[in-house]
Amino acid sequence: MTEPQEPARKSSLEPLRDAVKTPKGRENIAAAGRGFARHFAGWELYAITVVVVAVSGLLSLPRRAAPDLFPVPLIDVAEEAATLGHYAALADRAEREGLPFETRAVGDALRRLGRTGVANASDVEHVRRVLDERVRAALGAGQLEALVRLRAVQVRLFLRALRAHDWRGEPSNELRELGGEFPERALKNGWAGPEGCVASEAELSALYALRWGELTHLREHPAFKSTLAEWRRYYRFLLLYPEQAPGVEGARAERAELRLRYVEALARRDRDYPAALARGSLLAELGEGTLAAAELRAFLGRPGGGEWTLRARNYLVHLSPAASPADEP
Image (cartoon, rainbow, N blue to C red; front, side, top):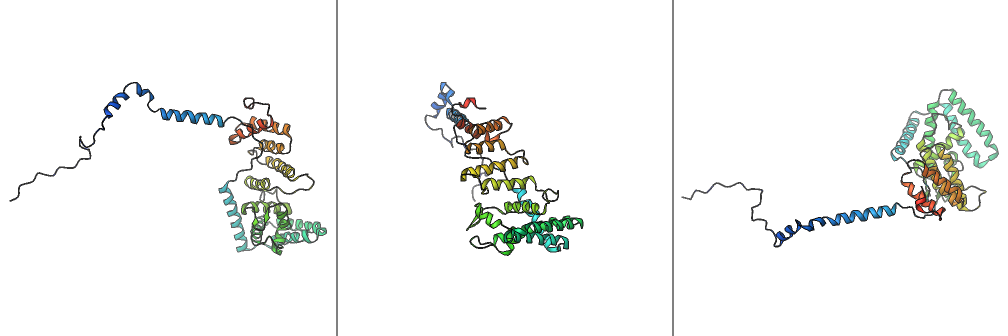
């Protein structure tokens, strides 16, 4: 007969008292920590904090920097996607349900104007008058919503023709009718090359929609008026890729002059755009140091300069080398 065994004991999560042994000498260290040395405990953290604060202070001081950057409008990616989706939905409906006769006549006149503007400039005014008459007829027939869908369809067709275009060859009839001289302008202004067009689909949509509104004289109609986000996309593209305008000496001066015009136009529509900072940078590029400094001071005088404040102060130090950083706003 086997001996009765003792009941099993429940294992404990607590370690035995002698399971963890104190290293030799630890008692002395702990005792010393209770003395004068405790005042230096954590000195590494304090040292790092002091260094970070010192470096941050140095980085926040104005330093001389040439005005070589200017602000461009920020893009709301979610709004951009929503706008493209809205155009697509309108175009889908137009292709599914068709468009009334008067509205289709407007589309035909727009295509004719695209062909005529390139082939026979002398007939442009006549075609423009025909287009105006057809727009009035469509509006008189109560086809405002149909015209909105027509614009969306022609935006889609223009983008499709542009994507299929070989920039080393001649434009197709479709691209010529919808875009007019756009292919030539794109090549001249550096918007396109053998590898394609630098503009995004959203930027091209904004460019074409504005052109469509100008040709039909409907740009200021509430149903066709561009949103602030669309104007921002439009002027952002032009600020980054300015057109080539005749009559201005030098490529760099030409770009700065054109950008100043874009800044003024954008500032009339976008109150949040830091136009004074952009003017200051572009005027400095044109060698107008006094005017540039005045614009930069105007920018620093307005509330909420944000991340551009230090850059504006750096520009001012560059434009006024005799001034010390402490003298600047």
